[in-house]
Length: 278
Image 1: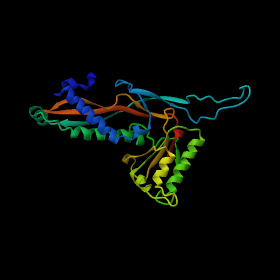
Image 2: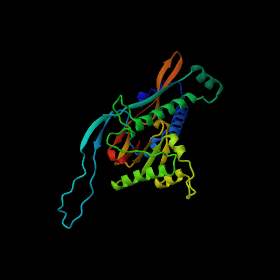
Image 3: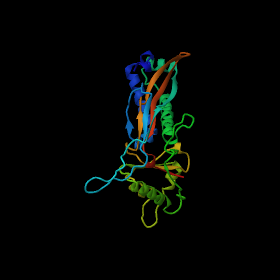
Image 4: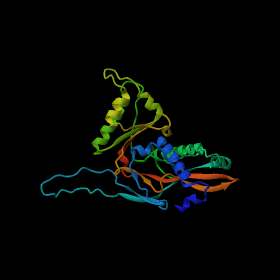
């Protein structure tokens, strides 16, 4: 990966390995979208675009004796090619810290790399859930054509459980099967930490049972937001060109600047596999 210019940096392979470890482990702690959406790739750093197919609403299959009934084929109703955007965050290491590590044999403090990785991972989740209107990308919370349900007050009674069960039932009636996942803002996550009358269970435990445990929270949603998806790859996936990695930008006033980067795109194939709670 010559484009990363790693050989120009004043680091040994062991130090680069440590940077990679810190970046990956920190990103895993932050990322939410990757926990529920299938990844397609990595395709390579040079892949700049990918096609996105729209299958529309798919009708039920047919049944008869001779197979002569008309059947609407499952096919692409529309295809467009979309550029895979780059998500990145830079960080700088002071030359004195690097020299101090070499001279004294001390581990290099990589806190700046960890913080940059956390910000890069957060930006990835923002792209997945909120999109980027300036660049023309939709996220799960603003996909045109998704189902929208008016949400009740989740601080009252069994409203949260009932809303989620209603949305899940709607997806099932449309023929969606497989992995259903719910992502909520932190305030809604806390509102479900309530003991339900008669059941003796927390409301969040009942919701998790509905979803086989696939309940997640992320602060990128803001407040009072939730989205339910059937997260099978035939409905949506995350296109990965270059997975998250660190490159060397070069020296600046003797200090050394690095960039954590990735190329990634949310690809929604069936918009009706998404339910947005409003």
